Image (cartoon, rainbow, N blue to C red; front, top):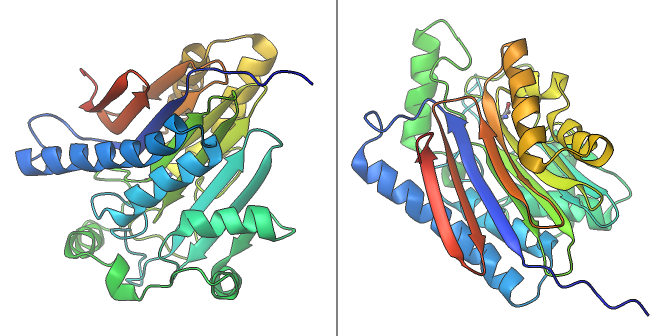
Length: 309
Ligand code: ASP
């Protein structure tokens, strides 16, 4: 029997990329967002430090960020044009490239856990809208009413967007959340969850629930979670492209992440990614002024927001 690999575990999270600058983020918001990132790292790190799986770690880290109203996922999701919360999420296991995703769900407290059920309990990869909501009930997942997800700041953002003639990413603040991890057996996993873009309509779906765009995990390459202007991330197949470059071109995680974010930028897109490889290389890349992000390993944890940190 081959002896199991023992590699140092690592967990990387993000809470969205955007126009955050040191002088524009109120101190209180800066502090509480950092605390929320630390809480998510703690939730996932506890699992990895105890020898648990990357898959469990990314799910728990993502749930922690979904429950925190700072970020555009779960509680605190942005509003659609009609003033509703319709959430997208996806999760992927690098061991066998099993994947699950949901789009346009409105009543599941933690959409990332619904994505995991789709992956593990259904024969499908992606469920949407009423069908996904029904599957969530059938799976006995925690349900929540609209008042759980809705927060006043998001309603204000919708009003502002309407007042400015409906420009989607005028504020350039994407609050999607994500987590990627490598466990002590060298397996990787990725999770991403979002409310999408403020004012989205016509059933718009972004990159987050699309395997290969917002999320990808492959033990032969890396785990990737993305945030940003989803339409561009879909066109560049960002998460899969990073994994393909690592696997087929021999690039490091940093090189692959930088090149693919440059490519997104050349199309006109803004956003960022987090990456971790089975060997434990971690990378962040973003072409916005900031990205809420954090990293944890056995050596400790650190979080950052602005590009100069
Ligand atoms: N990527 C997400 C979307 O386009 C938005 C975000 O990252 O906040 O739906």
